[in-house]
Length: 175
Image (tube, rainbow, N blue to C red; front, side):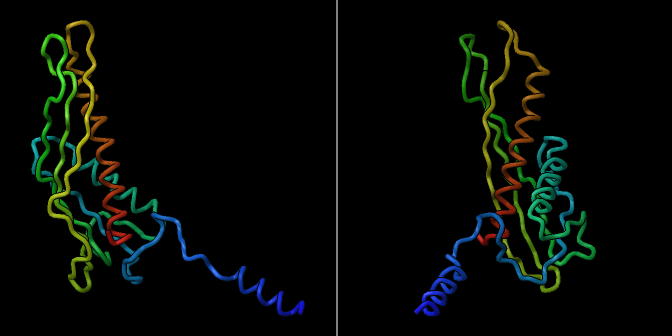
């Protein structure tokens, strides 16, 4: 009787529940070990956005711990290529003097993740759009120009982090 219970307990304890931590799995072919992420092309009028975005995507892939990330396609098992199609900044709120006080930053990007050995596109999004709003700091009735640009940079940083997380999750978890 004790042996039967012992077998049942051991079987129960060794069986998994079927759940895994989100964000740690991968539906990519197991032979993909090296991911090339060349600089994203920038077709917008905003400068240096592509550098921040490329760095954040590389960092996100590295953070997953399973892949070695290189800065170009040479020697990579798969490559993530992309281009920023456009960026727009639109006022969405105004102060008492009818001066814009809140802006919406909209980034549209085209991305493709390709297996370099088969030339098969494993994941793509031709028009990923991400939005972020930010407040413009004012002192009295004067709006500080440096504040506008500093906040814009902060928005680019936040947007890039969100895009990187979304892209890498979509690629690895087959969304």
